[in-house]
Length: 432
Ligand code: LLP
Image 1 (cartoon, protein in one colour):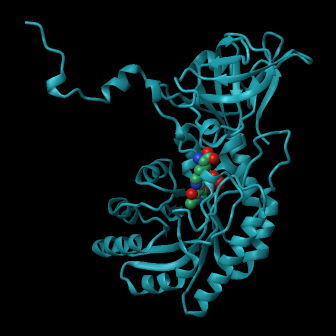
Image 2: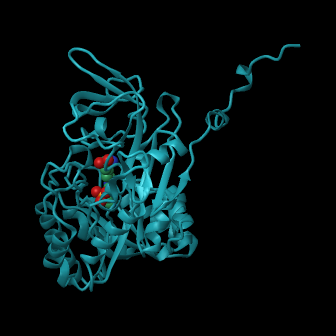
């Protein structure tokens, strides 16, 4: 469910709108390509997820890695969201967006001592600790500051999340978390070390999970571990169940389980622990709340393939080539019913064969100058963008009703060049 719909445009035809804003008008004003986010969709997804835990002591920490745009973060912060961060940069962003530190959890396998110190001084809620050496570094860092870090150990349950191999995190061979069998010994170590207070258990088994079974298996193991820890006198008062619930990328395929079904599973598996529950959804909140708008440059007709060359590329949205991800593409001007369809690869200007947004995609016939919207691009879209081929990062626009704001403007080529320095010996010689 999202708020990108076709509405009658000024010229008579139907135009794709983000809430009440015409994407054709937006493209004319900000240029293409650009990311566009819908406030109403963000709000709806956050609320649907939060409603699934109504009555429970639950904290929904938006996973900032999915979308770190300040406008998006501030929108969610206003709704009462906490945040899951994985770097000092993300932490600084959520603080700038007005999130209270006591609603922030810090994850990641490679936190540096400097990052830990910054988070400790800001007074975040908890660290998700992923290894014994990290635990020792956190203990030393917090002790040196005279502070104590509330921690959850991230436990790797060795569960198959049945998702793309690059985004599965809960198998023993993945770099994440501590092995389930070593958890008790590490809690003992944590209890003995100064500056760390082991109070929670964390698990996150992967992303774009479209079946509840892997969650059921993981949460059952998590409950077993909490019971074991408590019987060993550990005061466990929160569990962090991670993120990972999948979203519908295609309207022609069965939708993943609803947040309400996931909520019921959580109650059934860990509901009687009497713990605070933390969640780290990213994609579920942001994916369908964002699109990437691009303009067709050229249509290269030929055998055996036709290519629709657009002005957005793999550096703007890497998901299709990195994860074989499917994103629906909608023409911004609604095609007439029965309009002829053309099958083509929708590709960008980057000089790589892997630079595509869609392969063998049947779309209503497009011409140079037409606008398209790459759907479900609000999560892991702009955050994964790069300047590859020295292409400028694209702007991000946040829509709310009939208002919009360019929350990240398009940079200038001057900004790109000004960010680098020529060594003295390579500076162009001044002519006398
Ligand atoms: N918590 C932790 C510890 C995570 O590592 C992640 C995602 C999340 C929460 C949020 O998961 P979500 O609810 O969004 O599934 N770039 C990939 C996805 C990478 C996910 C990394 N970790 C993609 O575009 O599919």
